Amino acid sequence: MKRMRDRVFFLVSLGLILTCSSCTSSTAGKQPLTDVARLSEQASVGLPQRSEILSKMTLANRYFMDKWPDPGQPIVTDRRRPSNIWTRATYYEGLMALYEIDPKQTYYDYAVAWGEAHHWEPAYGGTQTHNADNQCCGQTYIDLYRIDPQPKRIGPIKQTIDNMVNSDKSDDWWWIDALQMAMPVFARLGVVYEDDRYFEKMYDLYIFTKEKHGGNGLYNPEDALWWRDKDFVPPYKTPGGKNCYWSRGNGWVFAAMVRVLDIMPPDAPHREEYMTMFKNMAEALLALQREDGFWNVSLVDPTDFGGKETSGTAFFVYGFAWGVRKGLLDQERFLPAAIRGWNGMAHDALHPNGFLGYVQSTGKQPSDGQPVTYDRVPNFEDYGLGAFLLAGSEMAKLADLPQGK
Image (tube, rainbow, N blue to C red; front, side, top):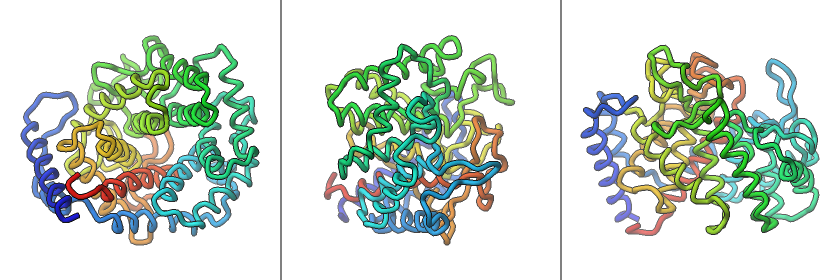
């Protein structure tokens, strides 16, 4: 393991050198690095021990579980909502990732109690809903079914998605968050039932969002980034005159690619499209990382409510770490970025009691939920934690790699 840590230190240092050497480029949105001392400090830390990563994850998760001892308790903010809405469903994605690397019965029981409390159904609309936000909970329902295949755990979400598979509509995903909410549900059903119809319908919905929504689609191939919805397609610009690429929105898409690719068989239909998207987005995001390891809420315009933001950063770290571990991303460039991102969150955002700072509240653009600060509590604390746990799970798996890898 010492040999691996020596190599990690070398790679982080090399990443620092490569990043600094590119500071003079004119790439859109890239800002010159000014705090080299801070980067050097983070590089010297290197990849944390697995036990240290797990302790940070456990601390953050304990804070949340202590605050929400009853998984079925409704969420009350500006109004009363069921606790299987997309925000909480994203948390359970992270909890299941934590359970995978640290299989404590408490985590499993907490997730099962959540599913039971909601009768394993979508958040709203029953099995007739086409809204991806309502379906996000199905990711964890299906994961729990794969552990213990009780039909009730998968029946309602399967019926929901079957209704979409049997429909001619392909324009349901009109906002990019929807890709993370629902694509992994389709992919899981395709795997469980060995049925390519789920993969084909998933692609139909995805490609409409990418290429047709808003006129020409919500994806800009020139920048390899996504507009959140049609309201942000040009001529809309940030106050600085740049394209508005919302950090968490692109984080949703990036995480969706990871979660789909991670479960799809190698020969599944359209897998190559998602692989290409993942790699292209990774390259674009790498150039936009801040010197402190975070990403701005407005990815290419740091003057548009610039500053640390945890949820988008966590999704990008999740993707970078997964891509490096799978051999899909260049280790010498992406491993240092993943380490900087994780260390930034663990050192600067995580409070001693487990609360996560710098999480932007719900919204759809950089100006929503401001100000984003270390101490401010977002309107929902769950999705930021879910993203943090996903990132931590992949960082822990990197720390588990054999010597010399």
